[in-house]
Structures are given as structure tokens and as C-alpha cells.
Length: 105
Length: 324
Length: 90
Image (cartoon, rainbow over all chains, first blue to last red):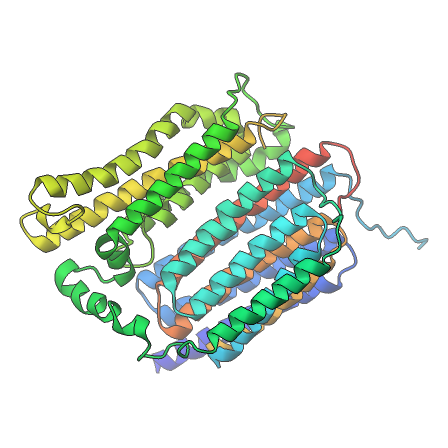
């Protein structure tokens, strides 16, 4: 019984994570400006990655595999936003203008 | 169902390769090359070749991209337009390609168990590894023990590449402590680099010594170790990286690695066996094999770290600002 | 079910590749490359579970670190090129 609950929970997490990754990718394709695309990727990617890894952890149970997945999650949480920050910093420094909405209200 | 993943990955590889050829901006080409390496590493994962995938990940997507970027930083950003028509090269390529494909029609089917390559020494290695060497990873046992002489040649080739870069590029010592453009801007990167630097080095040591039981080994571990130092150099500047691991030390390390490898071989000769026969290194033949494999992987790792960093220092020290 | 997840991740990689080819500025391409790196890490982890070989997680760990370092390297080269002036690079 507990096995079945864990299984279903892990499938839900995995599918949810995959859908978020796909949403993030579609966002990168369709958003109008670089900074908005950056926003889409950084948020959806980290969330989707977290969900997928949690789903895999539930599949793995208490073992070395789960520890490694935790390490991957830990690395991703730190390196993902840092890379995106560095990217935004570099774009700003080279005077890439964000798309502003300056229509009359 | 795995065939579908294979086909999609191969299709993506083809598209990426085509885009690499067509693009003019060399920085974009460098990023696409890194994507290409990642995709081919995924392909290796699907093909169940774990060691090769790890090596492709560490080298292709990491060090190779960084060195290509350093080269682009030293030269120009745009590819110059070609000055000749590609008609004759196209004809030559098509003719040669057709001849090669015609030649492969005679080869045995992919994965055929009666193919000569699967009947000759492969079954012997698979059969004898648990008894003679006692490590679960057959790739390591073949690379380090059965074909140890080949691996000595590979390490020497890497060492020669390091010597070649040293002879051509040298190293310009920078006396000033270059901090890089705008210290304030690099705060986040520096904190994260300081956090991850020991983790990367520790992970490299894990890959090195766990290579007997999982994917890994000397080459991959050396590359990951060098990547940690490169991260530090990117965040803090080449001057500070030079203070941690000076160029003199790198030159000594490169030679010491090859020396350890050859010394193991000579030691086994002195103890009564043949060159690189590990089983005479200890009382128990299996322990001797383990000891021999561990020592030569260490030697390979040291040389690879040193040569990668020599090449990186050689490129980056030639940039006008002194760091990247 | 693992296959479904890996197919979805592959579709996301393909979409990211479109942005990598099209992206008008260089930063779009770097963004796409970073995204594809993260997606590949996840796909390798899922593939490892699919084929029942947990050794693949070592590969995923290596990718996470390596893709981070190579993204930072690209950005430092671009910062070197543009200095503090210059419009968005192609």
C-alpha cells in the first residue's frame, strides 16, 4: 500500500516536473525579449528540475542513489540562478536594452 | 521505445552540426559545440557506454569549450568569408564518403555476437577480470591492466601536447594582481566559486578513486580537477590562480605523473615480473593488481590536471588584460 | 512512464535548440545552451533510472558542474569583448 502511494506520488512529481520544463522551453521560444526569456527559463527550469529530482528520489528510496540526487539538486539550486545572474549582468553591461512598455495608459 | 530516443538524439545532433557549419559568429559556434558534446554524451548514455559518456561530458562540454572560447578571445569573433568555391571539395567528400559507405556494407551487423571483434579477446577479458583483477568495472581493468601499455602511451601523448603548447605559447608571468573588470560586479560569482571550488575538487577525487567500481578513472578525474581551478581563475583572475598553483608546479606535476606511471612498470620489473605486470607488486596477486591500478590512475590524473592547466594558462596569459 | 518523461524532455531540448539557432543576440544562444545543459542533466538521470543503471548519476553530477563552468567562461569572454560599451552582440 505504501509502495503504491509512493509510486503514484513519484509519477505525479515526474510528470509535473517534465511539464514545467516544457512550459519553460516554450516560454523561451515565444517571449518577445531576452530578459523575459531569461525570466521564463530560470524559474521554470529550477522548479521543473526540482520536481523531477524529487520524483526520482521517491523512486530510489533510502540509498546512495537518493544522496546523489540530493547532491544534484543542491548543485542545481546554486549554479542555476548564478549562471542566470551572470548572464543578465553581462547583457546589461553590454547595454542590451530591455523591452519596455511605454505606451500611453 | 529506446530507438525513438536514439533517432531523435541523432536528428538533433545532425541539426546542431549543420548549424555549427552555417553560423558565422564564433562565440555562438563555441556554445553550439558544447551542446553537440552534451547531445553525443546523451547518446552514449542511451547506448549504455557509461565511461565514454562521462569522458565526453567532462572533456567535450567542459574543457574543450573553455579552450575554444579562450582561442576565440585571442583571435577574432567572426568567421571570415571563404574565398574559394566549395565545388571541388564537395565532389571529393562525396566520392570518399560513398566509397567508405560502400566498404561498410561488408561489415558484420551492429552488435552481432559472431563478429570477430567479439570473439577474440573480449570474452577473455570479461571472463578473467573477476578472478584475476577483482574490480567490477571491466573498462577500468582493460584500460589500466590488460592494456596498460597503451594507456602509458596515451599519457605520454598528453604530456607531449603540454610540452608542445609550452614550446609554442610559453607563459607570460603577470606581476600585477589583476582583479578583473569591476570587482563589484563579480561578487555573486566569487561567492559561488569559493563555495564550489572545494566541492569540484572533492568530486574529482571521488571519480578518480571510484573508477574501479563505477564510471571514472584518471582522465576524467584530471579534467574535472582542472575545471575546478579554471572556475577559480575565471572568478578571481589569472593572477590569483597563479598564486594558488604556480606555473612551475604545473610543469613539475606534468612530468611527475608520467614518471609515476613508468615507475610502476619498472618497479614490477625489479620485483621479478615483466614491465607493468602488477601482480608482483604485493603478496596477493589481486591486491597487487589493485595497487597497480590505483597508482597508475593517480599518475594519469596528475598529468592530465597539469597539462590542462598549462594549456589554459598559456592561452589566457596572452590576453591583453591578463585574465579572462 | 520514464520514457514519457524523457520524450517530453527531448521535446524541450528541441525547442531550446530552435532558440539557440534563431536567437538574435548572443545572449539568447548562451541562455539556450545553459537550458539545454540543465535539461540534459535531467534526461541523463531519468535515462539512468529507465535502464536500471544508477551509475549514470555520476555523469549527471559532472554535467551540472561542467555546464556551469562553461556558461561562466562564455560570459567572461563576452564581457572581455564588450568591455563597458557596445550594443548587444550578435
